[in-house]
Length: 223
Image (cartoon, rainbow, N blue to C red; front, side):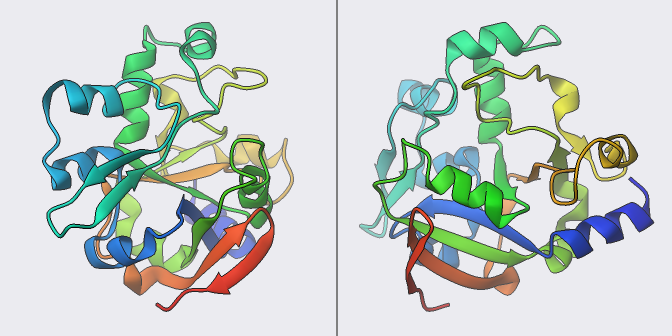
């Protein structure tokens, strides 16, 4: 991706969206927006308990006690399963490898349409969520070297498991934007933006935090 292409992407997608469990914002504000791997480090989770969270499918949210008597909620990954991953993984990767690759990153949608699609999906439609809206340009400027881009929803294998492998996550410089620009409309040329390990602190990049259920904004949370 050239600088001109990046400028086009940021103009088309000025806001990044991250969906967290309801009630997560206070801890995120204090400790930053952390990947699953970084959260497990923060909470001191090791051994088989860690492997069950970091290296396998999570059919439900996992709640972990934290030193401050608060609780960290690690989101499920229901839209993905081992059977689908076995069908679509490239480069000799296993489902365990893929879970670890995902868990080492924090993911953002680049359009509200993608966010609302996830919020309204069957697995999440009846739950409330804390949705963070972040300044795309500011975040990319600060975290550019830690960012990877993906042309697919890397955490979903349903209804069809699109092929994915080591080349799914590419740096901004390596991402084939021109290829996708010729094939997709604005807003869909990059599907996911991810930051390795996490964004700490995250508050400087956050414009709004909204408690949502499906496409309904229930309340705006204090920054």
